[in-house]
Image (cartoon, rainbow, N blue to C red):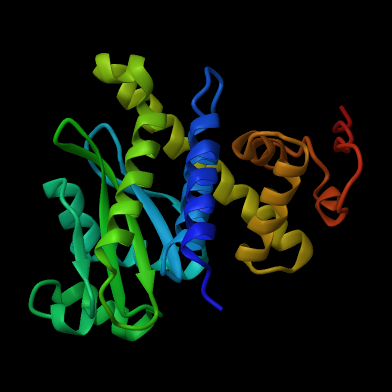
Length: 258
């Protein structure tokens, strides 16, 4: 049953409040982006979402994805060097594709790669933009072809705009070197999280999506930063076994013997 307009508006308001709460002095960009894509899938008629950010050389990197399938879609675009998110990033303008099958002439390599390995038929890319220049893109994926209604595109863009403000903050807007530093920190954190997912996946015999869910639930249940917990896993400061426990105090891994 579809949610009522009142329920949807209430959920949207709660999402904006939650995103605004991250805009404090010690906020973590990866947590912000992870929350953003969760809200996108919950509030919008999209099956999955992902975010790419440009680094100091304006090379795109995947920094958040709601599922492994969404991350694959992002990677296929980056590997093909073409696709809606790249056009969105380059032009700082939305790109909405109701059916990727109709875009074979526009992005032949990407469409062919999706046809072979992808799970989605429609893509809607929204820019994370600052003063006419994109710093990244929010991408919404649908398994079935079809357009995204204008009011949903508008809500998605509003969420992306709030996230952009949260990433850059006031001081980053005035100082380009801080902008680059903030983005690089987000990209570095993402690498650490990927490494931690691998450690937990190997320990529990899970797929990486289940491993990420363990990591995220552990961090949120203790009000810790996702990247901080991931770093402890990678450095072996946390015993992977604690991620099997639904609650309880953190357990430190035993110190290595000299």
